[in-house]
Length: 288
Image 1 (cartoon, rainbow, N blue to C red):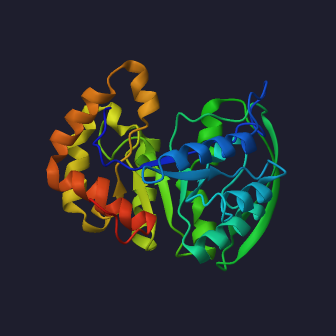
Image 2: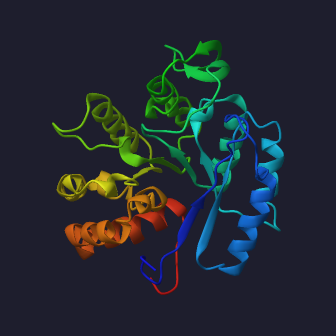
């Protein structure tokens, strides 16, 4: 009820089972079936993104099923702090397919993330050496605090090996580092925001979104100024809400109204219609 009538929802799945301890109420394959049923009920409203977690032994099977002719999912969702790096060897195989067929990828790229329950991890991932070559690295890591998970797994810098291998990958680095570049922002958030901007400048299909920035009206003016003064950045910022988090406080409708008014019709159309169509590689959408 709190969104424009023509809104299309990019529904992002999560696969917690390999990383979070506790009882699993519904297997990820059962969730896949349920989301397909919902999408089939509202085919013009929902673009589903399947969660791919390389620590799930059936992730290739899940990916193949989601993009089969029967299921026809639209994109891929990545959440590294569940215990894997973006350049995990299996994910690189997934991203090769995504790049080839223009399948968009959205990844969590901010702090305040959910993280794996276990603190000891045997990791495999690609890095770029001094000769600009991709080499596989294996290491054991122990994490003691939440911030360590965020800093290690969610940094936008982790995507450099992926983009080095697949420079045309359609990638949304969600949350824009959580804070914008200002004296109010924490130094780590400033660094992440700058890194995202660098990747946007370096690669043709890298985007970011403002999900959860919606919760802080103090950032609205700065965001609008960045959109208007940096042309390339302005073409790669996507509207996002993280509405399920903001709705907990009961202020989603209020904040969305304030945000839209502050951005103005021209900017709102750019970040909520034109840029998303570009990221999603949709050329024509009726009634837009």
